[in-house]
Amino acid sequence: MQTGKNSILSHWRHWLQTGVVAVLLLTLSAGLSAATLLPSGNAITDGQAILRYALPIDNKPVRDLQDSLEDISNHLRGKQWSTINNDVKKAAAVLKNKQAEILKSIPADRQAQAQTSIDGIKADVDALVISADAKNKPQVIVERAQALAKIGILEAAMVTGFPYTVPSEYSNLPQLQGRATIALKTTKGDINLTVDGFSAPVTAGNFVDLVNRGFYNDLAFTRAENDYVLQIGDPPGEEVGFIDPQTKKYRAVPLEVMVKGDKEPMYGVTMEDAGRFREEPVLPFSSYGALAMARPENDPNGGSSQFFFFLFEPELTPAGRNLLDGRYTVFGYVTSGQEVLGQLKADDKIESAKVIEGGDLLKV
Image 1 (cartoon, rainbow, N blue to C red):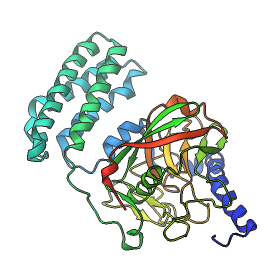
Image 2: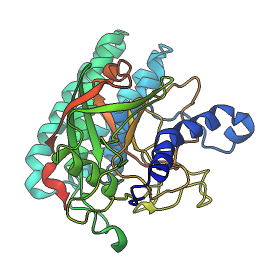
Image 3: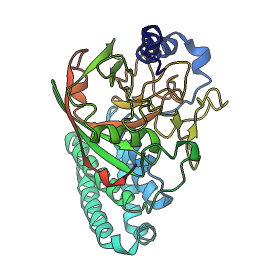
């Protein structure tokens, strides 16, 4: 990979740029027989909701509170107002009867902040009761989003420290021990990303480190494939990834997938090869703007600097039946500026990338 031979580099670049598309085509051609082997149900398509559920916390009342409000989105499209009213009432009941249990998971120095969040959630839910009863869909959408944002803050306050140790063979790589927010300025507009080090600390850490180094500044998108994949991260010249200036070597990043129910990620193996294709990753491809590490199709540990946005299309890659899950590392989601993604094409650029929150959680 570091020989400098054009044929080897060309082959490596070919796989980095086409491997994702090959699997997408497999997804579309797999048919119902393969799909029936995959998880079913109402997969979550909101990246911010996925990130809330991915937090490493264990507090049933706050999850019940979140569940009841997340569920509203499933019923708004069909205007199922009786079910929506029931969801709102469940949320109100948790706030009334389980507040003490919620606060038990909050460290003492964060209790005041948590109480402020709970008071704000109560106000939002009180407003939701009125709006849902009046069948005021626009207000329900706004008030639900406000309440869930505060719930996310409340849940984040429950997290204390980093919950596991990265395997020693990857401990030389940067790690993000928490979450960070990245602001991208592109030629078509601004995008904000949240990257999740709780579920993919090495991949997220590598990305944040490269952002800090200015690696992505003024870099062009190399692939905008049929409205499914938007890829970037191939530097100018012969190299296809990041060459560490200290080691003078290609920084290789392993496949890193946290499976629901596990306490730490799997490394270096796809969920399919691990015999876990019926299970689900904590960070799935079910959201428009999922952020994932590109890699050669035949090398799970061959990623480096190239990453892609998945432009989720539910009619062709239905949530819960996506064959990309567990094959590539998802390490975050677009949290604002989703409309910009659809406008970006090959040769558009990231003009600048900057860490605006969580940079102190990077360990190098």
